[in-house]
Image (cartoon, rainbow, N blue to C red; front, side, top):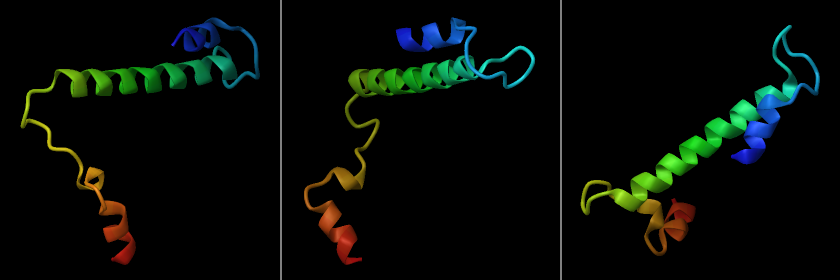
Length: 69
């Protein structure tokens, strides 16, 4: 996430608009992605048992079942 902050504050790169540089845009996208992944990991860490069911793809052998379908 520190890399995203460095990119956001950078005044380098192509101009997308009069005020927005390409590297600043990439920094915002990277920061948003980091936020989403960190919130997902916190949700998985602090969830209560039984609230969120794991995906059926996580079962053993689910990939072979999908391949046969």
